Amino acid sequence: MPASSYRRLPLVPLTTGACLILLAGCGSSQDSASGTDAGQGPAAASVVPVVASTNVYGDIAKRIGGGKVQVTSIISDPDQDPHSYEANTQNQLALSKAKVVIENGGGYDDFVDRMLKSGGSSAEVVSAVKVSGKTAPAGGELNEHVWYDFPTVARLADRVAAALTEADPADAATFTRNAKSFEAKLKPLEQKEARIKADHGGERVAITEPVPLYMIEAAGLENATPEEFSEAIEEGGDVSARTLQETLSLFTGKKVKALVYNEQTSGPQTEKAEQAARAAKIPVVPVTETLPHGKDYLTWMTDDVDALASALAK
Image 1 (spheres, rainbow, N blue to C red):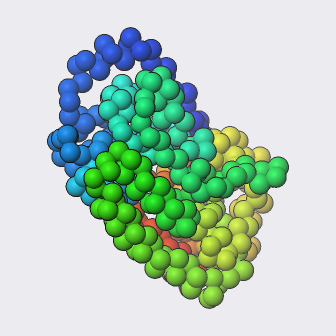
Image 2 (spheres, helix red, strand yellow):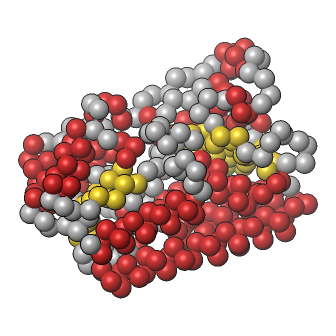
């Protein structure tokens, strides 16, 4: 796949008039929206309409809202790269009805903010990056993939519960209880990371992109990948021959214990890295940016942490 296939693509602007004309023929069912994952069945006056930028946050919203919310996830296809998603009028319709919007933030899903602004939405917007409090390091770039940071996800659960409570005060106790239950289920994931740190702390791994870095850091592992490589891959840019060779030498020289590979942004350079790792019999741990088919957030993250632990134990 050429590098351009995973570059961020510009959002096609929608004028207010164009949106109204196109939306008139869209019908009322969110199931019909391309690239969406409708939540709790037909909308009713007693449920809170929620829109999430990806099904990662959609699943979290469903866990906290339960039967009191109807959730639409704009991106739910595991083969879709969120960085290059092009929003459409059906997404705009869902956002126009939302009382609560959950986005990643940090430049990851800017299409949400653009549509909210163009549509004049009054929805309560919850940004996972803002909740995290994370900022870019001096001279560096922010790693916006905060759903791999479990303490952040716990705080996000509380913030989502608060937003839902504002929209539906009568069900505040339900939202708070569900958030606390979800947070309790995150604790075993942190414990798994702590076990990896105890067993393998300081060991070196390689990545193709910064997507799993929060998990890697929490597990006490060292990212040995040249920064120029992972940043270029994330931005869809070209990797210099020198940087590519430096990266491949991590595998040919057996300098890392595993390669953590983002399956959703594959290209010639990342494929070479994967091939080099497999040729050197270095385990490859695939990760994604949206929920795989048939998994919820907790099972997905559990599988990823377990796969990392298994790879390091080989």
